[in-house]
Image (cartoon, rainbow, N blue to C red; front, side):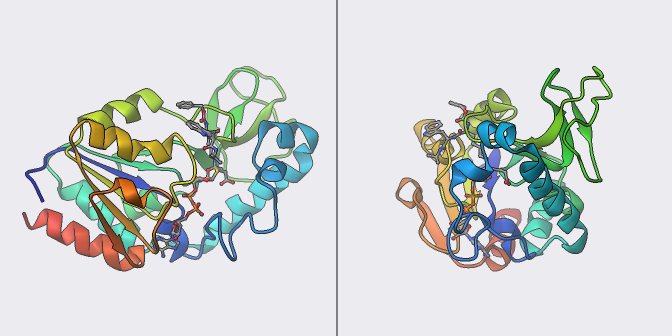
Length: 233
Ligand code: BJW
């Protein structure tokens, strides 16, 4: 590993798989048997708000029954100990990174424990069920929706993410299939700017060819081992 100071870690559904949260694609995935456009687009929300709100109500409620795993804990340990720049960019909408203790963290695809206003764009913490038509505390419109970035919508904090990716020395991807952009393109951006790139995933992904190194295995084993390596430098 070359000398490193600035690290970006991108995480996906695979980092939470060992906590019991289903990934999206593949056997047993959340979307097995569904067309993406039926569950995860603004059009699906407009067509059947009851169905989409209920889908996210159930997933929000399920967070009470899961806990962070060894991968989340190891990344929180890195966050606490790393003296250089670090940004953990998660595509996940669960809250397991923060419950493990990570603070240098950003949710680019939204959060289950948050609601956003379709009228003013405001966001607020949300713990309970979110019926369609719930009122926004900021603007008063009856327009709160799950704070989830659907296909065709702009992910959160792209400017900050792109600056961190362009400025990092080491880009690490954990538990993501590399199927969804713009996150899938971060590895190419990091490479272009001279970063070393490392993938930690259960299996080869759509993006594996872009990484300098790919290590295959469960995140709960690979991530703690990698964090030990980095902190021992
Ligand atoms: C393990 C493991 C274990 C399992 N250990 N590993 C080109 C450029 C830009 C955009 C596009 C483009 N082409 C197409 C687009 C548009 C679109 C897109 O990407 N479509 C693709 C289908 C092609 N993208 C968008 O619309 C995005 N917005 C956008 O592009 O705005 C315009 C823009 C343009 C230019 C710059 C910037 C912006 C928005 C995407 C929103 C994604 N939202 C979702 C839904 C969240 C809601 C919910 O939770 O229900 O986010 S989609 C879904 O996929 C979710 C995830 O965050 C995301 C990624 O999935 P992830 O995490 O990779 O999960 P899986 O299941 O796919 O993979 C898990 C992996 O883990 C697997 O590899 C396993 O092997 C592994 N694994 N167990 C280690 N124990």
